[in-house]
Length: 105
Image (cartoon, rainbow, N blue to C red; front, side, top):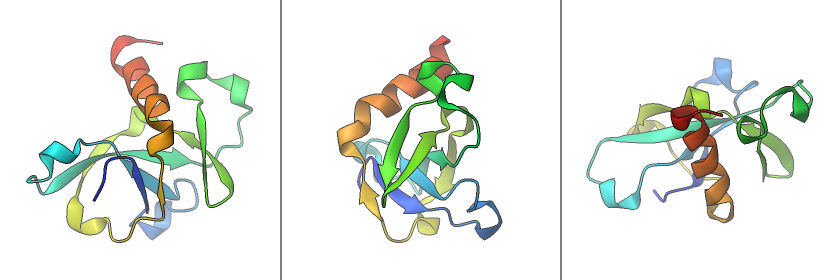
């Protein structure tokens, strides 16, 4: 389970709005049974409806999805089955979005 890998949302009822979770947790913390994840959201809002740092997007399987850093959570590792994509190339977007939540937009 690598940092910045995207996994299908294990909760079917939420998958329409939040199809994937991205693991943010460092690979150095693999001994823990949970992973810090950030949801990726489908959004009907125009990209300029939120501050830039909270409306960054990534592509997963050809779909544009928006980072939802304000909804980060720890999930049991066992719920994250098979990764569908690596978003390591977008690492700075995830760090920036999380920093906006912690430090302010």
